[in-house]
Image (cartoon, rainbow over the protein chains, first blue to last red):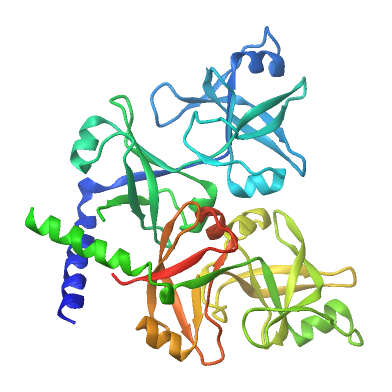
Length: 211
Length: 211
């Protein structure tokens, strides 16, 4: 009984540290998107076509094009999917589990770039269609931060942490990947299913839970 | 520093109790569904029509009909929505945030039965259509349990708890409602967004976290 009271007291103290504003992490929703390799851009839009930038994203040098593509799976299609730049060495498609069910595929939950034995999908424009083999993942939730942030949060690159996100339906996400790079801006990225599950709104903040 | 070690030790102990099998709670996904009042059943299917049972559900006396309806919102429609029985005093529609965006409505996250100022929707069959005013909610996640379970978990009816669910993407759901009734079978109910966010599979289990 004494032990139980002690646990409650200590956990209360831990929870209080969440109110420290310096510990807040902005949370962004990564909607479904594709990163295309140069070859696929040329097939889908034409060799002479010049892709146009729509807007910059939160991480440096990352941006969204005005152009969009259609994903075609064995069970369904999804139109108007955003393309992010700059081009990558290998085409990568990031969708949610909800999207995967619509398309009829079963992609793994993975870090960006880990595409081995991931799912395949057809990507189409009005001009052409390609099959992007081993390209589709459900992005593993992660936090971008610079080395100063990492010091402040007492974490390091590739560390797995738990993050409390206080949306309308508060949750603690376990198994969140920390990615440290001096060019990163502090931001936690979740997918649309995770956003819907926590009652996301733009001002939602996350805080690392130190179990 | 001593305090930090102490916290880690105690939290570790708390986490270990999760391995106690007696503490496991089966987790079920509530897909989108409607509960219809008798009047709406008669309008949508006809006064003489006899609704037919498809299957029993996990809670006593609750079942699914073979018949289905279409939801019509300002932005989209969803076909083939399950109807649960028996009929209720007031029609209630339970959908996910993903569904709400498809339909173009913004229902509140609520306990079953709390429909005041909830969203409205059109419900249609091939025969007819009705407007169900203040009927649509996103169901607040909850646990059904009997009084013995409640004793074992050291919780009471209407208590709010946190539940760790160890899917492929483990999460701790805060703000989970406990509902105690001697006729209930032990089961936690989440919606499809929550299921997708945690990497749900049928054998997923939850455990109450005693913060």
